[in-house]
Length: 219
Image (cartoon, rainbow, N blue to C red; front, side, top):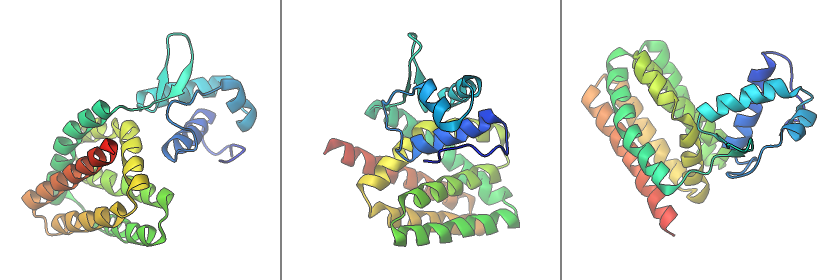
């Protein structure tokens, strides 16, 4: 992980990005305790922006702040993943339905680039790249739905969702190609403005995600 913060945005945002990336990529493990003093020394920042970043990450579901004052990385349970699935399967399917109706040409071009990038990252077996482009593809569909309420609610799930996707890709390397194939089909349905097909394909994709995770968790 980077040993310093480049002052381009606010310190709070920089610390937030640094910690979020470390958590999502597994460099800071689930259940691990965060030490303010250590982060302050590593990033050469005061504790105030660290505390603000921690509050943001708590809202994302990535950190647990305990009554004693300690802060640990979230460690989602199987039940958490089941609850996440029940919400995702409805909201992201709805997003795909409206994205097929409302997407712009620029958004289609962007989605196509994500599909192509995911294929390259899967071929290279690049976990970090796969996670990043996976998020971008799903979020591009949510944005294209043109529904700010759906966007807000869906993006609030990014925290637990990051653990979920990472676990699947890490434990089942072959799943990356399967996910890419699903994305390609969803993308094509959105291009064709086939709303019902886009919704059903997204539903199948998320159900496949969940089934893959539950099989893996049972081992």
